Length: 90
Image (tube, rainbow, N blue to C red; front, top):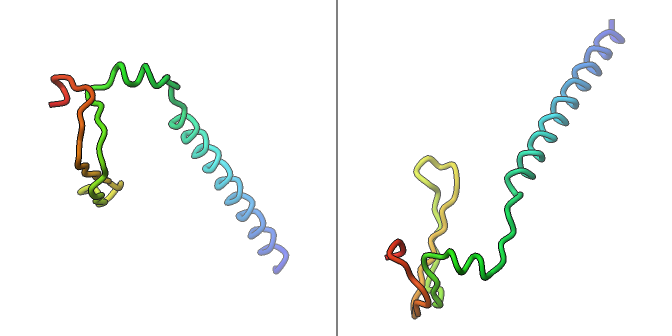
């Protein structure tokens, strides 16, 4: 009877290991897809920006969103000098 229980345990451990491996593979695949972005040159980013400014970070506040699913970080600036702005940034 003991060897049978051991075989069953080995079988389920093998199934669990395969499931975990499959889950990790899918997770890494989605992370790779999410992380792939177009690389834009600085000039391209600046050209399409609604607001460009220079300033000093005054303080930062971090909190969870209302659902508690991700972190929001707010950065407050002082001594701001606007370099470029559009109607959408006001």
